[in-house]
Length: 322
Image 1: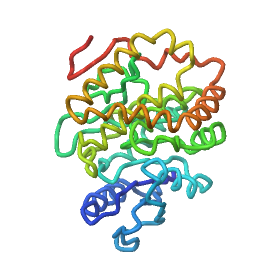
Image 2: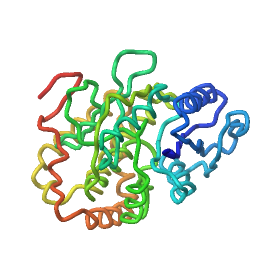
Image 3: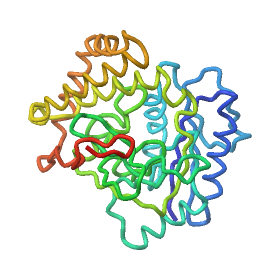
């Protein structure tokens, strides 16, 4: 028997209820007599329309509106971390799992794959045979990309659906003081989390037997201004928070060229002021970012070689390799 705390982040709007219901139903369907699941829904919508009893939710966690994705997940983990669970399943409300998800997890365990701290599922795009992600590839420019082919080597994980051993989650919180980095609020928190997990020796495995589906940015829109602003800003912040100075210096030209490309893209596609706003936001929060940088890097294991998280190629864009 294993126990899994299933944390589902939701906007809690009337529009989101059907996908939330589908997510919960998939978890309930996948559970069986050897697996006990605790359904935890977390939201920062004070006007949410989530009915705990109708949706068969065990715990509903409500956070302030400014909490963001990071805050609502951190608050949910605080409610569940010291309960008796073997794993935490972190999943978006616009994702759902295959009916054999937990059965195949037990099969992995029976094959002595018990040393893994983080298990990365194979995630398809909703109602499609196309891959949404099978891990996250990270480049020396600080750019990260979901792997959309099975054979792409990855070192990081997507948080749209992720299994984390509870004992390792406790270790992360004890080391760093938090689960997801509170400064990031929305997007790229999974990249920053994965780097910190690697930094203290976290062992990742990928399993194509654990299958999930994801609608991707159902709430905000796939390439909305909000999504892209948060993604570009947090990509820059993740570099500053997690990269040792030696790796920044070694890759400084790649980093500068990529930031120039981002600025140009922002100018053409969104707003002439978008990248300037990112820089101003960075300066505004610099003191906080300095603290997170110091807190993060000093926690890394002495055996951690930061460059091992990078892809062996320069960049991959629309399946073109450079």
